[in-house]
Image (cartoon, rainbow, N blue to C red):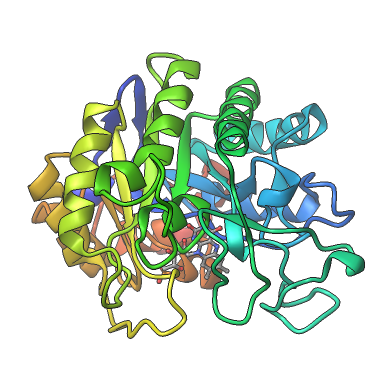
Length: 363
Ligand code: FNR
């Protein structure tokens, strides 16, 4: 039976074999603090492609050293990083999947210890301990993290240029698409949200002004990409906090993104307020994605506790979203897409030829 989840989807010139994709997930497995992927990353991304995912989106990758969440993050500000990412691209392509990369700047949430760093996870690394001065729209800290320096306009120009340079290298590495990280309380989201942006210049105040950094990045990156390459943006649709970003703001923003040439928005939530009350549960962010799809008329991906084949199929079958992103369930079972295809009785399950025997009734 042809299930919607396993129908190809086309964005610009890219056709992806199915709609079960892997969202960006930081691995914090860079060994030397140089932003260069390691064998772990090759295994990690290859395993999802071999397990039938339509596309994998490489984890948040710093566009500058200061844009990393931790020293173990991937980066894409030099050619050595680009060349190593190219090896991951080739592996994923050889397994029939598409690959994108999430370009990121962690803003005021940068320079922190990862879970296996040399300090308390999620706390700031001091400058004298090989951390760095963080930046943000305003000098307002996130929770107990170090206070950021408010970016001046020249430094904002530098951020835009860094996104463009990383996008150029991502194209050179062979990536099929780019995702700009505009969610989870990192730099772009910090500009979007009144909770973290108290600027009085052209980057603060009105919704248009708070969106200016993101739209500048979108325009500049779009101009750098080949015409046929899709551009995605991940947004936190709501801050889940009073005075913060609300779903209506995100619907308006997604409409602007569509007008500026963005092909799909990836709808997540939260991350910019330590006090947010998040009603976590199965598929909890999907209604936000649907609201954006319907309100802004732009393709969306849904993410967040979509762990079951039938649950995923229902989302695409009923048009709640165009793509389903499955994160932690793919970590638990890298063959999730094959399992889903079999559970849904899909004719051509994405099983690599050498493994087909393992799925036959009899040997
Ligand atoms: C994440 N998430 C995430 N999001 C993002 O935009 N960039 C990132 O690099 C990361 N890193 C990351 C690491 C790990 C280990 C996890 C579990 C999550 C969020 C992720 O993309 C996804 O939105 C959530 O995990 C919710 O989806 P699931 O896991 O419930 O399917």
